[in-house]
Length: 215
Length: 215
DNA sequence: TTTTATTGTCAACACATTTGAAAAACGAAC
DNA sequence: GTTCGTTTTTCAAATGTGTTGACAATAAAA
Image 1 (cartoon, each protein chain N blue to C red):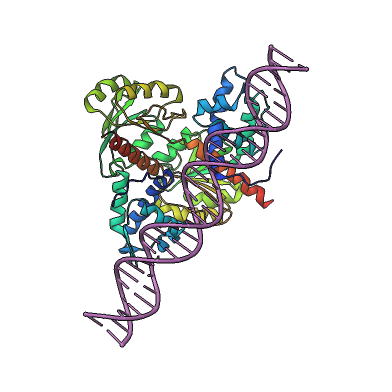
Image 2 (image 1 turned 180 degrees about the vertical axis):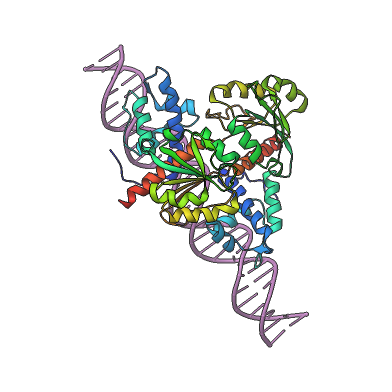
């Protein structure tokens, strides 16, 4: 059932979206769904769905389709959402607070266990009942708790130094919202750069093109 | 100089990153850069950079490289960052406030001109000196100001209804942070879904894989 | 004028997506 | 209970797209 072929990055990037749609379907009373039906709802081709899901072994049944609950659980498992890795947040400004409050870490495979900031005024405040500590405390915290992931909501000038400290402390993954490009050049370190700005610029380009077409 | 070949989406997605790196280089005293040098800094191949930039015409010079300032400006222009399209924000909760405060709209081709929310307690408060108005006022505002883009930081249950209203009012682009998948099925409408959750799940998968390799 | 550096471009390659044919499972009819 | 047609997956092959490597052309430097 579990194939050993390396799964392409393109497929992995689509899995969360499948997971989301299947989660919605779970709330309805529909039990099964065909690739064709799902493709119509998601706006992609049925063959792509079939091929994607097949990378992980056949969850579907001919003449029946896919069982929604089973498929949802299986994708969740593939993504590792059923694990519970400790994550820490660095930077409790506007963005950090929004991320901490807005994201459902516990249903995404993570548990937010500490928050750090450099601003003395913020120390002691609580977000989601987690106290904000000074970044000086990062070392002592990590040596005891060994968080796997750090969420970086800090200015780009601070990013390099902070990430180096955290790598030395055994942090393996970064969810990076800062405008600094963390390259995953260190082997054994995973970086997911978010870069909302880039997404906004892409939108700018596309709207410009749209208006150009019309004229 | 301006080729008419359709530019692939993959190239467009890379442009903001080039723009960012070139912006950093501008601050140094370096005037020119070769594709090889830039590729080393950005962690990709030199030939990809040359091919990407060539889509828009030859900005480089053999034996010299690329002039950083010229290239930076040119990419900014291609992305449309020198335009100033009106954008409105819907939803002034945690996330909406963070987006409004954190993003540098004016250097990304947009101008944030109004903020709407349904929560009566927020009405009248100001973010970046823009007053929060009730969503009831969207219609009258749009009929006068014709904003081109809407930024959606609202619950997924509200997304469909709000976006339909805005499309009817002439909004052409959506920067969608809600967990609802806006498909750009309406022709003439551009949607950029952000989905931070998806990015977090991808990170979860990759860390899981990393840990698996080691064992 | 020669040498060196570096682009622009094209062809080969790798990767991703789509198509098509075959096999499997379901459900209805007998 | 068996058969048959339909649905739908699975697997393999073909197409399409994106990336990389090689090299001729060209500009700068010496």
